[in-house]
Length: 282
Figure (cartoon, rainbow, N blue to C red):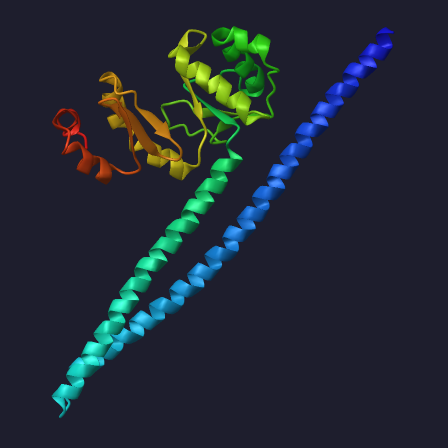
């Protein structure tokens, strides 16, 4: 009977492993299809941009030639210049459309890269040389030290654990971050939610930080809100950073959100108290 139970247990573990593997493979294939689609659209956009740039260059050359060439019919030359200026205005509009297309492609690539990382947890502040060959167990120790109830309630599994970047820079004074890849996004969200509620996370008494893992572009966009976020947090405005880099906060009983600093600047001009709070950093 004991042997039969062991075989059943192993069989269940094998099924769970295969299910996780198939799920990961499916996600990779879907991501590859999206990446291929983005690649095709990017090439089409670049071809269009190159064609428009050649047309713009040709139009400007024609304007220059007409202006510089002596002509006995000044009225006709004036009409030609006006026509070409209208054409240049159209080309300027094309340039703006091209910029929008490029931004759309960049946003698509960023979104795809973020989807690759959606089950990742980024751990910041763990000293270098701390169990470098055993990072997965190190993560379990962090969980046990800070969230023992989660360890008991969750089936804590780790697909991948590593430092980033892979190579250590001797000139860098801060430790490299640790990336933990979970099999399920809901597990990651539950851990991060508990970490936010706890406010203080440590490893052997050393303060560390747990956060979601994003693409370089998304991380940079979120960092631009960092100083404003800290000020709002001290004033109990309940700030939050929404995906990908939208600042949200509560003021006068309402929740406001902004995708960029320019819109926030316009808003604070209508709120004297908020203006005084942010005028030195915005």
